[in-house]
Amino acid sequence: MGSAIADVAARAGVSKATASRALSGKGYVAEATRKRVVQAAEEIGFVASPNAASLVTGKTKNIGVVIPFINRWFFGEILEAIEEALLNSGFDMTLYNLHPGSAERDRVFNFFLARKRFDGVIAVGVEPTAEEAGRLLRLGIPMVSVGAPVPGIRSLTIDDVAAARVATEHLLGLGHRRVLHIGGHVADPAENTVHNLRLAGYRQAMFAAGLASEARATQTTMSVPGGYDAGTHALSDATSRPSAIFAACDEIAIGVIIAARRIGIRVPGDLSVIGIDGHEYAEMFSLTTIEQRPREQGLAAVTDLLSAVGGEPCAPEVVDMPARLVVRASTAHVGVVADAV
Image (tube, rainbow, N blue to C red):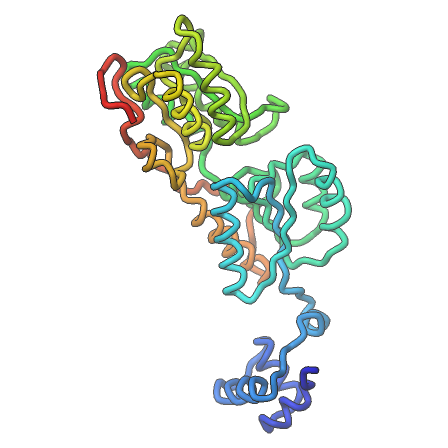
C-alpha cells in the first residue's frame, strides 16, 4: 500500500498542504521545495491519487475521445498523436470507437459521455447528427473536433471543398474530361459531411470547366477494398470508362489502382488517379494526392482542448488545416503514353 501524503510531508519537512501543491502542480511552491517533496515521494513510493486530486481541483485529468474507426490510416494517425500528446501532458484518455450506425453509438452519446466525468472531449471524424451534436454541447465541457466540421464546436480540418476542387482541377488541367468521382457513402445530401463537401468541390470544378453534364459520382466504403470494388465496376466497361478518377481518399485511390492493374489498364497511360490524404503508402503507389497531416491535426486538437480546459477561450469555429497538392506518377496528360505505376 502506498504511503500517505502525510508521510511525504514529514520526510520532506513541509506541511501536507505544501506537499500536495508540490505534487499536483496546483499553487505556488518554491522550486527547491518542490524537488525535495518529489524526491521524498519517490523514496517512499508514494503515488498521488487522481481521484483524490479531482475532489480538490475539480479536474479528472481524463479526456474522452470518440472516433469511428481505429483501423484506418487517417484515424490511426490522429489517434496516436492525441494519445501521445495527452500522456505527455499528464492526462488519461478514454476511447470510444463509434462505428457509423452501430447500436453502441446511441449508448455512448446518451449514457457514457454524460455519466463519466471528463475534463474535455475530442471528436475525431465522427460527423455527429444535429441531435448528437446537441448532446455533446449539453455536456457543458470543452470540446474540439478534428477531421470533420461539427456545428457549434471548434473544428480542425482541411477545407474539403477546396481540396476536392484542386484535385479535380488538376485532372482537368491535364486535359481529362471524363472524370469520375469515387467518394464515401452520402446518407443525407443536406448534411455538412466530409463526403458531401468533397463531392461539392468536385462538382464545382466540373461546372466551372463547362462539364457539369459530364459529372459522374459513385459511392463506396472509404477503404482499399472499397476502392477496388468501385474501381472494378467503373473500369469494366470500355465504352463508358473514365479517363481519370478523383478518389475521396488515398485508400480508395490505391484500391482503384490495384483494380486497374488487374484489368490491364495502365496508370497513368490509360487512367489517371488522384486521392486526398497523403497516406503512408502514397509514395509506394506513386499516387498523386492532396496531402494533409493528420498527426499535426491531432496535436493541434489536444493543444486547443487543454487550453480550453485551463480556462482559455475556445471559439466554436472551423480552423482550416494545411493541405497541398503532391504530384506523382499516377496522373498524366490525357493520351500521353507513360510508364505504368
